[in-house]
Image 1 (cartoon, helix red, strand yellow):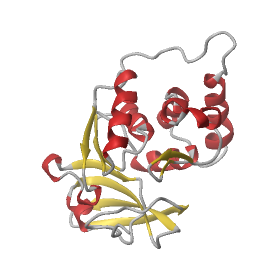
Image 2: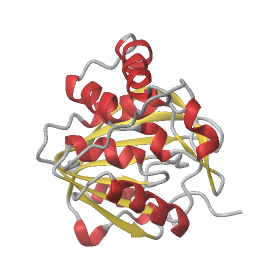
Image 3: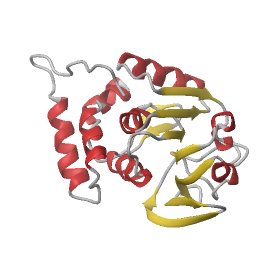
Length: 227
């Protein structure tokens, strides 16, 4: 969890805090987001600091935004519904696949004991690390590499969130999930997927269809092959 928060409004500047609260009320609470801890985290984390300067004034709009390297920061609602699906209580060890801007990792870090995040593009890992360090997070651990392999050296995980679309659900993620743990992953064709939630019960996985979605592809040995 962040140890401190900088004020994000000075005289004459845009009121990002007000925009966050409006985002929570109009985009999240009015839809299916009801977990009070998720709503609190979304109201707290300064999303505009995770997007390029040209897009900061659009940071709280109901849409994904480009962050460079052909990647995006997800729509606020998608971040919230994926986070809510993990059902975090505060003591969990969570794996995130696809660090991207670092925004989702920040939300998870507000809600879990530790977050392990994997990104295949080193420049994104570096920029996310800087923002998260500047915000005071100390419970986020980074790796650059093939996210489709998970992070076997740190398994098992209480929750795994995959922020890229996979052609199917890799067995490697199931293997790294603890008993009772939850996996949230978009799966399906390259340009349109379904968000699934899987809960481990012994060697079985209870599967739930959460919502339709569109994510950038999960590229790697257990995902899509790079073009």
